[in-house]
Image (cartoon, rainbow, N blue to C red; front, side, top):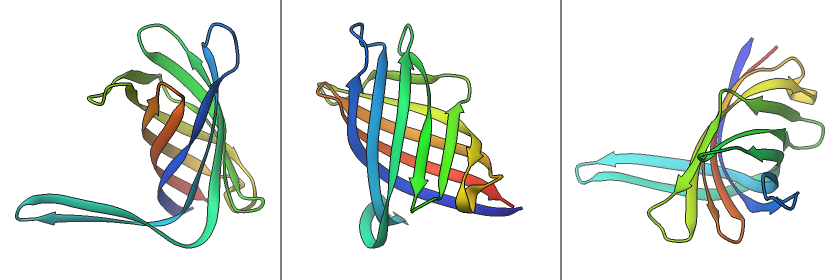
Length: 148
């Protein structure tokens, strides 16, 4: 199998799907991007720059439990007909961030199926994200995907 990796920053919205606010729908997208990380004598520098290409879209259902724990399943689409379906490995964590009014968290997903380029794919995706009190989401993903 061939390894395909990606790093993208998705942005969008999380919206409550029930009165209790324990189920959320997340809908985000990311443009094609070039991520640069440079280690210098004074520390770390990084940038994310938009490049030519299409957008990836992300749709999921988040089920919130107790103590900031949650699980999630959904789909990421990379161009027409090329998608990955995923589900949580273990549980995600969400809690306060250093920025007032914003929570941060992380989660790991396992690829359960794919279409197009990703038919028969296996692998994992990690997500480090923030969500504001108004539901604005910024999600930094890194995926390592194995395709036939």
